[in-house]
Length: 507
Ligand code: ADP
Ligand code: GLC
Image (cartoon, rainbow, N blue to C red):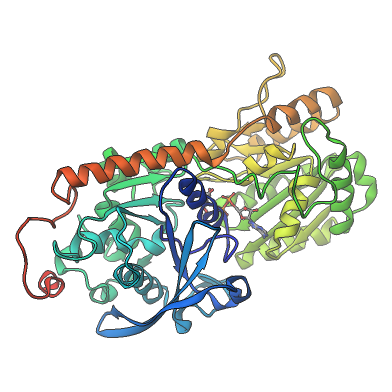
């Protein structure tokens, strides 16, 4: 598994949650999983216990050869993690960029990362059946496996899976950087990684991976449309036969009010008493008045990015405030949202608390202490917070898109079924209508309790998703074997090549 972030080592969003949980679930199913990720020095304390296992491993980047140290740590007793260490690339304050924008050298950083991830396999003597890559940061790996690895190479029989966690982040760079990838010149073409005159890591992965997945069935359909495809819809349609949607799971060891170590009191579906204490604790923590104990308290925990629907939230804020409720928002991201949220909190200091930081503990406190949770996302490949909210009895109000659509069934008052509230049109009125429905039902204590309990009974544990991944791995690996080691690739002709096949391919 190749990830650019894995909880608890480094995290900006849900990708890290998946990185920290899916490998464990697969390992429980009997897979031998090893993870590769960058060594971000900023988080070095958490890496305690990670020892260098390979020193000065040569990794090619364009005409340079970069000496690389590999550290090995453990995610748990069974899953090993390899950290790729090169401080000039990964010893930074942020993972991918500052609130002002991406780091200028992300192309070099993650091209190098992909190369290093492959180079480390022979160095640590691990020959995987399949390399499972996640998002653009590992997008070149399927291309390298297809175009640079020769039949006699260590990874010649290795298949590749690419998971799209978010099609909006594609790893797009200027065409002039293409030669530094080391990929053959013909790969800079319409059926390769060329994209509107530049290069695109996700396109490279879609074209080259043996199998592609995304993180919910609904999103796998959506990204094939113009509205959601971010200009890759045509390529995805072309490759749709190898595209599958598998919903993410929840790591209930981390996200469960029964044993959550960060919250003021534990509680369960059978005994909700502690939730009251959690609400009081949240109000105190974010310095909102305790009179809000009797009003709906709404929580938001989110990356502050266009995807997450903060423009809708701003548009309905006056209506929210007229209703008299509390709002606790935790997030970091783009500067423009920092400014917007700070202004809102200044305008309504008695009702809105905003924390512009990354705070794991507060994220848990919000899940436990809020009555409702907002995710009015423009798009949402899967979304984890709505599933966490369900388990905490914190009723989600979501836009019906991607994984939010797949996981949140709307409450039906006649049947007493359903777990949340959702709206379809990305319009302030629709968002407000859904929220208003929730607010009206909040005062009907019995009904509200029913909605909470319906959600708390849902089970999104990783096991069934991991089984689906395992099935796909097995199918892909079997197909590759049947095709003589290369269903979707140009290698494995059976002819023994001599000399440096990489050089020949490049030429
Ligand atoms: P995305 O991956 O698009 O950010 P998800 O809902 O899949 O959205 O996952 C977000 C994850 O990141 C959750 O675990 C959430 O609690 C966490 N998170 C987001 N922002 C913050 C923050 N400011 N502080 C702490 N945790 C955060
Ligand atoms: C992305 C998506 C989010 C998803 C997460 C994990 O960051 O935005 O919807 O839950 O990846 O797959």
